[in-house]
Image (cartoon, rainbow, N blue to C red; front, side, top):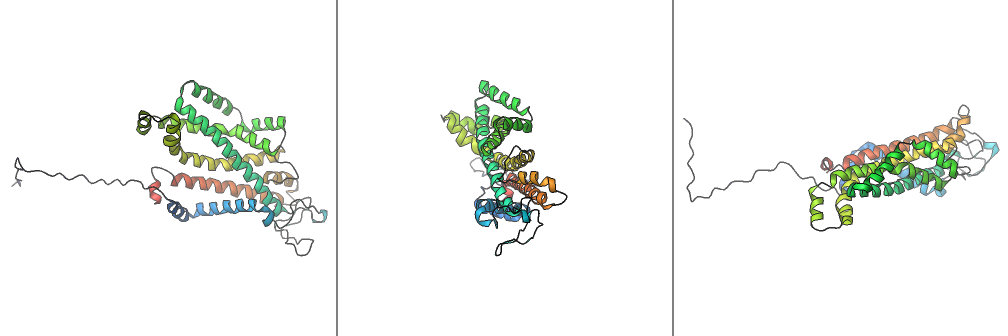
Amino acid sequence: MAETFPLAKPDQQVVVSEPINDVSESAHLTFGDYFRALVADRVALVALSFILVVICGSIGANVVSPHDPYEQSIRMRNKPPGTAALQEGKLPHVLGTDALGRDSFSRLIFGSRISLTIGFATVLISGTLGVTLGLLAGFYRGGLEDIIMRVVDLQMSLPGLLMALFVLFALGPGFQNLILVMVVTRWMVYCRITRSMMLSLREQPYVEAARTLGCSDRRVILRHMLPNLMSPLMVLATLEISTMMLALASLDYLGLGIQPPDSSWGLMLAQGKEYITSAWWLVTFPGLAILLTALSFNVLATWVRAVTDPVNGWRWV
């Protein structure tokens, strides 16, 4: 027999419980959460540790370097790694010497200073320029967007390396010219990505609500829209550092980058290629430095993308 339930009386108040929400809100990650996520990812921790070692070594190159990177000695030319120094009391040449008798390890440390400086400076300048133009193009649309994006399309249709070679051939190689060339050839990447994300953000309800409340365009862009772009922009900037270092090494190898007597990893490769069969260490260690640094930045960018993801970031809490 079917079970019956008594009906509620007209004056009886029926209380309906609220449904249980099983979807938990994503928590805001703190510095401790990021640290625990970094410790949990052994590969990212090793990559970050290597990057910090390279940065600290480049900053304190004058203290860390065992020898003067510009000191030449014909008697010590092309000596293998571990060769003892001529002067007593000095450390041996850990990574050998080059064709002019200069210590390769000291030149590698001083070369990291130039490579990292150009990489970080280029990302900072090109990122600021590209993000600013992308914000304006994605927010205001219209004729301003058409002008900016047509310039972006025109410049991206040209080979970046060919443009860099043309500019450096006209202006001449140099530290400032290298930064200028890198900025000119890479700002479009930031602009295009920022503009594409702005097109979706400008239709969000919170943006419409902010504009309805009378917020200025500057406040809407900087306070409500730009923070939502920081996660992908941080990933892009981390990847671009390794890209700039590889591009600098290519220009140095072609002879249009850093000029002697200064040292950079790409220049060390270019100078050591003539002795690759007799002095393998001249190209091996600079090549490993470029490889490991670029790989570390790529691994770190992958970790940053996973941790700052607004959908799956709560998994790291």
